[in-house]
Length: 171
Image 1: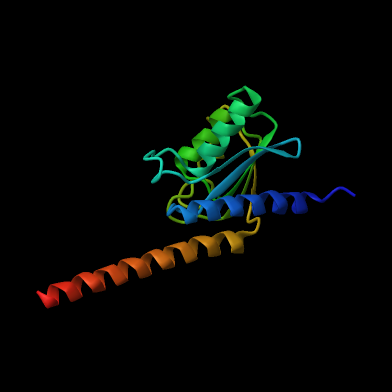
Image 2: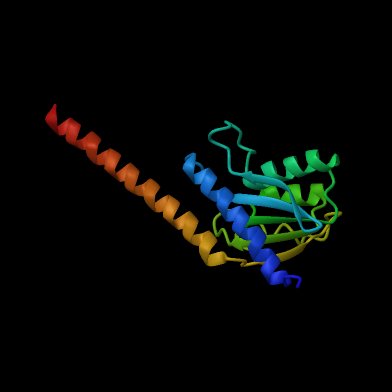
Protein backbone atom coordinates (compact mmCIF):
# COMPACT_ATOMS: atom_id res chain seq x y z
CA UNK A 1 0.00 0.00 0.00
CA UNK A 2 1.42 3.38 -1.01
CA UNK A 3 1.27 6.14 1.58
CA UNK A 4 -0.90 9.13 0.75
CA UNK A 5 0.65 12.48 -0.17
CA UNK A 6 -0.13 13.74 3.33
CA UNK A 7 1.60 10.72 4.89
CA UNK A 8 4.66 11.21 2.66
CA UNK A 9 4.80 14.90 3.55
CA UNK A 10 4.69 14.04 7.25
CA UNK A 11 7.38 11.35 6.93
CA UNK A 12 9.83 13.76 5.32
CA UNK A 13 8.87 16.61 7.65
CA UNK A 14 9.59 14.37 10.65
CA UNK A 15 13.10 13.87 9.28
CA UNK A 16 13.44 17.64 8.90
CA UNK A 17 12.35 17.99 12.54
CA UNK A 18 15.08 15.52 13.58
CA UNK A 19 17.60 17.66 11.74
CA UNK A 20 16.23 20.74 13.51
CA UNK A 21 17.03 18.98 16.79
CA UNK A 22 20.64 18.60 15.63
CA UNK A 23 20.79 22.33 14.97
CA UNK A 24 19.40 23.08 18.42
CA UNK A 25 21.94 20.77 20.07
CA UNK A 26 24.66 22.90 18.47
CA UNK A 27 23.11 26.17 19.64
CA UNK A 28 21.73 26.96 16.19
CA UNK A 29 18.17 28.07 15.45
CA UNK A 30 16.31 24.74 15.09
CA UNK A 31 15.45 24.55 11.42
CA UNK A 32 15.89 21.38 9.39
CA UNK A 33 15.45 20.61 5.70
CA UNK A 34 15.51 17.66 3.33
CA UNK A 35 15.47 17.44 -0.46
CA UNK A 36 13.53 14.53 -1.89
CA UNK A 37 13.69 13.06 -5.38
CA UNK A 38 11.58 10.08 -6.45
CA UNK A 39 10.59 9.38 -2.85
CA UNK A 40 14.18 9.31 -1.56
CA UNK A 41 16.11 11.87 0.46
CA UNK A 42 19.05 13.14 -1.60
CA UNK A 43 20.09 16.07 0.58
CA UNK A 44 19.78 17.06 4.22
CA UNK A 45 20.65 20.10 6.22
CA UNK A 46 20.11 22.12 9.34
CA UNK A 47 21.03 25.65 10.29
CA UNK A 48 24.78 26.08 10.64
CA UNK A 49 25.22 29.83 10.42
CA UNK A 50 26.81 30.21 13.86
CA UNK A 51 28.97 27.09 13.95
CA UNK A 52 30.01 27.50 10.32
CA UNK A 53 30.53 31.25 10.55
CA UNK A 54 28.48 31.41 7.36
CA UNK A 55 25.41 33.64 7.12
CA UNK A 56 24.20 31.65 4.11
CA UNK A 57 24.29 28.27 5.89
CA UNK A 58 20.54 28.07 6.40
CA UNK A 59 19.02 24.59 6.51
CA UNK A 60 17.61 24.97 3.00
CA UNK A 61 20.96 26.07 1.57
CA UNK A 62 22.82 23.19 3.20
CA UNK A 63 20.26 20.60 2.01
CA UNK A 64 20.11 21.94 -1.54
CA UNK A 65 23.90 22.08 -1.85
CA UNK A 66 24.11 18.45 -0.69
CA UNK A 67 21.39 17.37 -3.13
CA UNK A 68 23.01 19.16 -6.07
CA UNK A 69 26.36 17.49 -5.33
CA UNK A 70 24.71 14.10 -4.96
CA UNK A 71 22.96 14.22 -8.34
CA UNK A 72 25.71 16.18 -10.07
CA UNK A 73 23.46 19.00 -11.20
CA UNK A 74 22.76 22.46 -9.80
CA UNK A 75 19.19 22.23 -11.07
CA UNK A 76 16.91 20.12 -8.92
CA UNK A 77 14.02 19.68 -11.34
CA UNK A 78 11.46 17.21 -10.00
CA UNK A 79 12.73 17.57 -6.42
CA UNK A 80 10.84 18.65 -3.32
CA UNK A 81 12.22 20.62 -0.41
CA UNK A 82 10.81 19.96 3.06
CA UNK A 83 11.69 22.57 5.66
CA UNK A 84 10.38 23.07 9.17
CA UNK A 85 9.94 26.85 8.87
CA UNK A 86 8.81 29.10 6.02
CA UNK A 87 11.89 30.10 3.99
CA UNK A 88 13.41 33.58 4.14
CA UNK A 89 14.00 35.74 1.07
CA UNK A 90 17.49 34.32 0.47
CA UNK A 91 16.25 30.74 0.57
CA UNK A 92 13.19 31.50 -1.52
CA UNK A 93 15.49 32.90 -4.19
CA UNK A 94 17.53 29.73 -3.90
CA UNK A 95 14.41 27.66 -4.61
CA UNK A 96 13.85 29.64 -7.81
CA UNK A 97 17.46 29.33 -8.97
CA UNK A 98 17.77 25.63 -8.11
CA UNK A 99 14.47 24.86 -9.88
CA UNK A 100 12.95 23.02 -6.92
CA UNK A 101 9.55 21.75 -8.05
CA UNK A 102 7.78 21.67 -4.70
CA UNK A 103 8.22 23.40 -1.35
CA UNK A 104 6.66 21.82 1.72
CA UNK A 105 7.07 23.73 4.95
CA UNK A 106 5.82 23.47 8.50
CA UNK A 107 5.28 26.70 10.40
CA UNK A 108 5.08 30.24 9.11
CA UNK A 109 7.81 32.71 10.01
CA UNK A 110 6.08 36.04 10.65
CA UNK A 111 9.24 38.17 10.82
CA UNK A 112 11.24 36.92 7.85
CA UNK A 113 9.09 34.43 5.92
CA UNK A 114 9.18 35.12 2.19
CA UNK A 115 6.41 32.80 1.01
CA UNK A 116 3.35 34.30 2.68
CA UNK A 117 4.27 36.00 5.96
CA UNK A 118 6.55 39.03 5.77
CA UNK A 119 6.70 39.12 1.97
CA UNK A 120 5.58 36.95 -0.94
CA UNK A 121 8.49 36.36 -3.25
CA UNK A 122 7.55 32.93 -4.57
CA UNK A 123 4.57 34.00 -6.66
CA UNK A 124 6.21 36.97 -8.39
CA UNK A 125 5.41 36.55 -12.07
CA UNK A 126 8.73 37.98 -13.30
CA UNK A 127 10.71 34.97 -12.07
CA UNK A 128 11.52 32.35 -14.68
CA UNK A 129 10.54 29.49 -12.35
CA UNK A 130 7.56 28.83 -10.12
CA UNK A 131 7.14 25.98 -7.64
CA UNK A 132 4.23 24.33 -5.88
CA UNK A 133 3.79 25.20 -2.21
CA UNK A 134 2.30 23.09 0.58
CA UNK A 135 2.21 24.90 3.92
CA UNK A 136 1.39 23.81 7.43
CA UNK A 137 2.70 20.23 7.45
CA UNK A 138 3.24 19.38 11.14
CA UNK A 139 3.06 23.13 11.75
CA UNK A 140 2.38 22.80 15.47
CA UNK A 141 5.43 20.58 16.00
CA UNK A 142 7.62 22.89 13.94
CA UNK A 143 6.42 26.03 15.72
CA UNK A 144 6.77 24.41 19.15
CA UNK A 145 10.40 23.54 18.45
CA UNK A 146 11.16 27.18 17.62
CA UNK A 147 9.21 28.51 20.60
CA UNK A 148 10.97 26.17 23.02
CA UNK A 149 14.40 27.06 21.63
CA UNK A 150 13.84 30.79 22.01
CA UNK A 151 12.24 30.37 25.43
CA UNK A 152 15.35 28.57 26.69
CA UNK A 153 17.59 31.17 25.05
CA UNK A 154 15.69 34.03 26.77
CA UNK A 155 15.88 32.23 30.14
CA UNK A 156 19.65 31.77 29.76
CA UNK A 157 20.14 35.44 28.91
CA UNK A 158 18.00 36.46 31.88
CA UNK A 159 19.99 34.19 34.22
CA UNK A 160 23.27 35.58 32.87
CA UNK A 161 22.11 39.17 33.43
CA UNK A 162 21.07 38.28 36.97
CA UNK A 163 24.52 36.80 37.68
CA UNK A 164 26.25 39.86 36.24
CA UNK A 165 24.09 42.16 38.36
CA UNK A 166 24.75 40.06 41.47
CA UNK A 167 28.49 40.24 40.85
CA UNK A 168 28.28 44.02 40.44
CA UNK A 169 26.46 44.26 43.77
CA UNK A 170 29.26 42.31 45.46
CA UNK A 171 31.96 44.70 44.24
